[in-house]
Length: 81
Ligand code: FES
Image 1 (cartoon, rainbow, N blue to C red):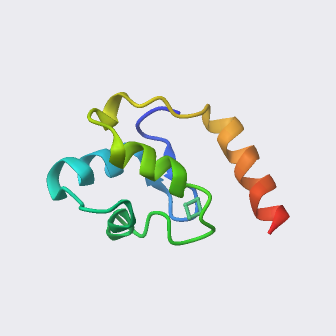
Image 2 (cartoon, rainbow, N blue to C red):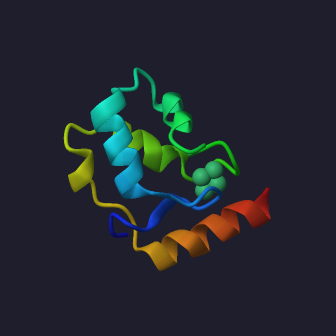
């Protein structure tokens, strides 16, 4: 996934937006990332990845899954719910 691809597919929130939010707003909890265009408040698939960025000292450098595989896995997650 590159920085311009959505980490939150429900709301189309790009990784870059989340990293910028972390850098500028310094959220105290991962759940506060929901204030970044609603990230994580839909199906919930992206929450572990949002938490990964939030926990990281260098969120811009965090490797996330390939965007196509990420979308496929998210669809499986949604289908299983
Ligand atoms: S992908 Fe982020 S809440 Fe569904």
